[in-house]
Image (cartoon, rainbow, N blue to C red; front, top):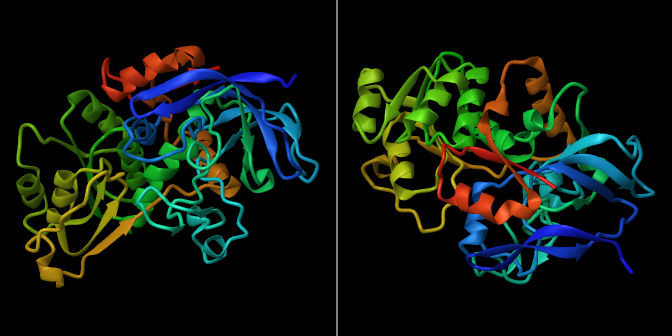
Length: 365
């Protein structure tokens, strides 16, 4: 009889359940990782609600921290028993997209009909865990193309310290990188959830000297100040666009980062920009967006709008863990709760409803 494990699977919109599943077999290019800590992402909530389509029975989750249980015969330079992470995006680096410098969009997997209802290559094909293959909210996860995707955890770093690296930190930092931040820039970051907080930290590391964090939650705005925000604006108490224009003496911000995925925040992120400014979009949008003609200067404002899917691969993970190890950023602050894997349905309820000051939940098999 095959060995079994516990795993959280998508059953139907509104239902994720913990079930018994077969522990995966290890192919030559794979690694079986025993999960020691994982977490729930905002994207998992979109899956739970049926706003992002995945197959029924798929194990969800895409943020693994664990220990190598078994290595495929073709995977070298690693050892069983070694602590590792793997990026939420785990491309194979063989595809046209990867070789064209966009490995997150690894088009290796032809999707007969993607979440947009279109045929052809899925626009998020590099995201496999909990999207195209079984994910990390389980006792074990099979890491594909392990040679390219496993990253050893430096000695002395806890699971909680590196838990943000596979997705939240990589995504938030990519948002800051896409904002084309220069030393001395003014940046406005809309929404201070986990990704927005990481974007705030990334903006500071890249040299922005006026970082304006926007949220409606004073607790999160307080954490934003710890992450590097110079100014915090509660949108419930002020007109954010007016305040930004006052702070910039009417010039507008050099760039903005949208980290929520709503029409209102996207539009505000566009309105705060200077002519020639950059809007870096990180939100997962579940409805069509409208671009107001005045905010867009009728298409004549030299604005740039860039989107991102978080970069993965072992080199990206190594760099992010180096930032953590250097002490320049402490993202352990974002882990506010801990649940056992068997209690993950309750953890989903807490996270989806944003109760009790939750930011990120450490889920422990």
